[in-house]
Length: 109
Image 1 (cartoon, rainbow, N blue to C red):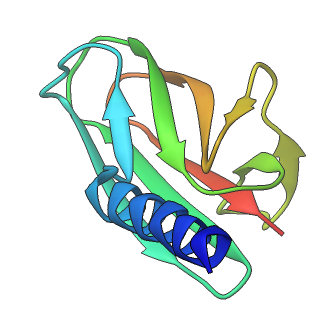
Image 2: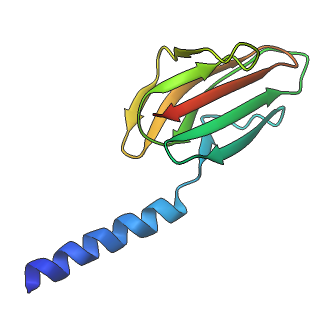
């Protein structure tokens, strides 16, 4: 009985932690970078937009598990995002955004 209660408390802690974890966290504040996050059954889709006239480079922590890819919205092709590293239920990615450009990142599949 003690083991079951201990197991339930671990599940409860993980559940609360997942509710408190932001879907995106940048290593530094960056007001020109905007994002949109959509959840799908098998993947997390992130759309980043740099609304400034300067290139923006940050490290980002994205909620999700699995392979991390950059999606070319025009062609529908994906390629593995170099430098991505999984951390628990998230992935740390290098985020480089050209001036006034958009980048789509998919985590999962």
